[in-house]
Length: 68
Image (cartoon, rainbow, N blue to C red; front, side):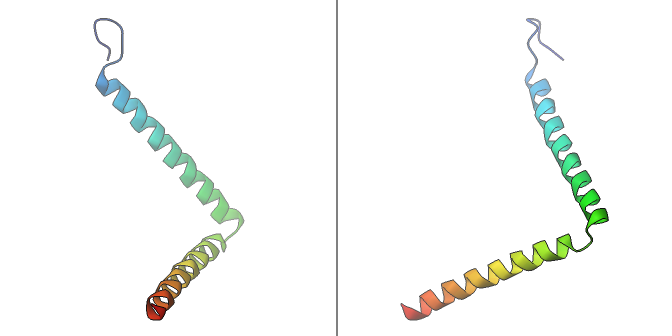
């Protein structure tokens, strides 16, 4: 997949970037799967904190708009 000068083509560079994205996503899914096996409640805690943060920001925005 190289050009006549021995340099990789643009398609080769794109595939390498895609490979690293897929490798990182695969690693992340493996880590999350192992984490789920070791500690069953982690996902609930993460999403509970995320939902609480969203609600906190909405409340702060609403109170700022009401006082203006």
